[in-house]
Image 1: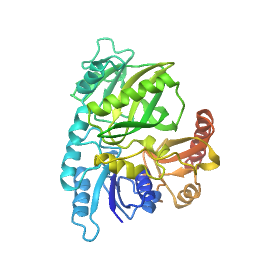
Image 2: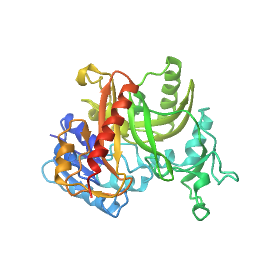
Image 3: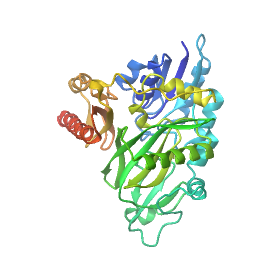
Image 4: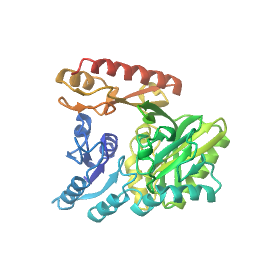
Length: 384
């Protein structure tokens, strides 16, 4: 059995997908959730309290070295997920220790460089909300974004940024805030091109001065044929321009038949959970090795034959410690994932777990996710 490492802020989805494809999985993440450990052969922490949701470079590299020196079944490589968007140097060093199965560090560096990315969009005639690299004189209607961050935690309204925080590092840019539906395209890219697995609605919610924190996704959702074909062309163009490899996603805003590109996530995205049926990781590994690959077929086993699925993160409203009873109640539900272990500590805004739902359309899925999120929040209210 081939051994494969998966590394992310939360590696549960990748660990389950790789195990489904027959790999012996080593999971590297910050939380060590119960279902992550259940899916993996072993788990190693690469962050934790005091790292503010950030992957700790020395811990990650130590774990990769350990895998390199493993006797008997050395790992064939490692797949990066969330947490590596703005850290190409960490991908670069990690790739020297163990083969990187994902978009190469140089390509990540370029696609996450705002000037290079939006310059490429402009050169190819791809629409995007107006961007500037210095603070606007009138900040109303502008967002301050950081290409080194992820999950929407790095997005603030420019008008609410304190003057002391107004210095603009190279990864920061300002973008016009748009009305519309935030969406993404989940796609697989290789040397021969890219193919879209599906389009998704993105769920966001405000946390304090963070107006657009990522909260989940719903998909696949249908788009008009001409619009879908336009997005296919955009994905293929950008996958080629930036040498993307493996599972990635394109984030965009939709307003009617108009779309404006926001960013590319050059690594396995959270929306892969909606498409991570058998064969997803095999196809990813093949694409990253420039071998022949095909998109895995739709999941015929989805509950009740429902076509649309969704995932939603449950964030802590206040500081709490998970007790044994509540941990068991969460684990008893098959619609709750990323299961924290008893004794886990949460601060306001920390992810507690996620909930899932399947139904016939996106509206039903959204309603079910909201209700299940509320159920979990009620369970958490009694925690001290």
